[in-house]
Image (tube, protein in one colour):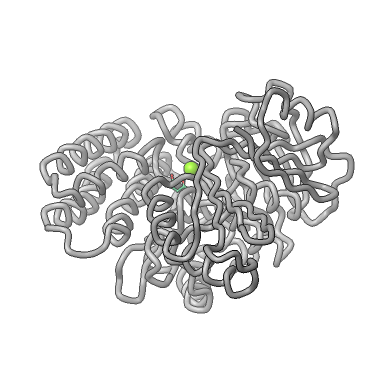
Length: 420
Ligand code: ASP
Ligand code: MG
């Protein structure tokens, strides 16, 4: 049995939806569980709806939601014929669930509402895909992942309850393969034991696919993307970027951790633990070989470059010239954790700790203000962090040319440079 994950770009137009249907059709006879993301930029649109709702702009939230509804209904109309009425009813049920909520006044946390609202993107897209395949006589079955994937209530970054989820998958999902070759479900979302929707973090559908693969002992996971294969750098920024056909789990988890947009960083562990290969393939060119990621060590990799913009550097200096030691570090991490901030790079000197973060402006300002009770805090924004795996001197020199390097860290395989 295989797991496929179709991302937003693979279903961001009616033609692409049909193309996705054709790819699935080409695997006729195989058992496949399909994890779907929200269509195109739907998650971003839903984020705007959450903001409007939370700020009390109910009219705006409803208006934006109406646009989203129209968009999905329009797609459905072109993707289903015989099955259309039934499929429309299903979408309407999700719409009603959301509108009901949008008419309320916000009384709980932003993150809570975020998950209740944003999760609807995947429910809608997967429902449309299932209806389309049904229209194409493929006999898929649609599964509401909220009945299967149980999480805690750490909204927007929920943690999976593996034991419960495993039980549900084995008892309720596995048997569906007796009568169906295709199971369609949602990535990115889950549900608490109190039936509240949760999400696993942006781009979390890859991780959902890996969770299903791990529990179902799948033969492989294929992530269908709009690139022919994984590349050594973002080709839009680095025209010399090279295609890489083989990568190890180890390499990919490092790349993803440093911010490469290949796949969600949490995806690798569940696959590595069961030695399940991960394939990255192009939905635009499904015959291309793509990239295979497995436990085999890869030698002679080219320099792999990950560039992250919008970084902020914070310096925390002790107020009384005491050394940075375990207690001070503990205090700082307590402040980071309190805001769910995770430094991408840290370095310490005698009386200072330097930390680099993605600049989530409100949170960083809050961190700086909270920390100023214990430290002298300085902050510099608008920085770029470049990480190079398997670096060569030429690559480093080239990328550092005309830049001011504020912080640099180097191991035998990786160099990181924070630059202005
Ligand atoms: N739709 C979600 C997002 O855009 C999850 C995903 O695509 O993986 O972040
Ligand atoms: Mg995506």
